[in-house]
Image 1 (cartoon, rainbow, N blue to C red):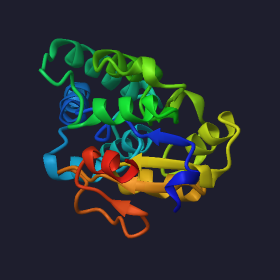
Image 2 (cartoon, rainbow, N blue to C red):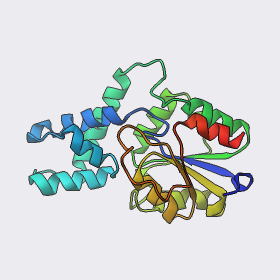
Image 3 (tube, rainbow, N blue to C red):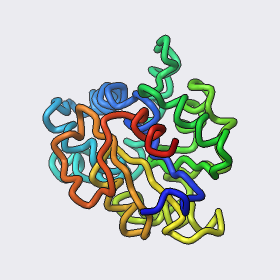
Image 4 (cartoon, one colour):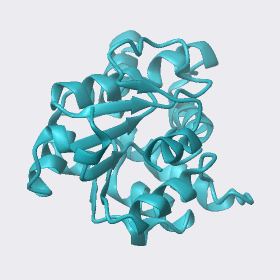
Length: 220
């Protein structure tokens, strides 16, 4: 990858820009409480690499719980938004150097997009809370595509919307499923693993970074 050829940075959200994974864990369990189902931390490590649709389907298959497709996700999202609104932190819910990285690329005239498996309402809430919404040219969520990550749909949509070629785009991810989606879309991909994803397979990544600070240094 020649960094001079990169015109757009496509950011994943949860675990990449926003520190929200643990709240998702709590929200899933609260949504499942009425069904007497509990996700333990070890199972959530597996779920963390999957889309909400995949998680809901897996829970239904394993438990035979009686809920309609999409209902559990809606309830989880409702609870998450409530929890997120109650949580106050000095970092505004952002991962280390997330604000600095987004602002750096904005100041250097890169096109910027968020590409997330979360809902649009949840995405906007997180970006506004982190005071970074204003820096993005586009926001793509699970509401915009039929198939979530690891399908490449959301990254293909972003690339097409920017009228760029895939090799002009760099994706920043934190999970194996996100990496697969990026590579299937033909884009370059740097991964910043979290404690929830560090044991996943990132062999196909163009680079594995320790933090978003490394991303800024790479482009300086």
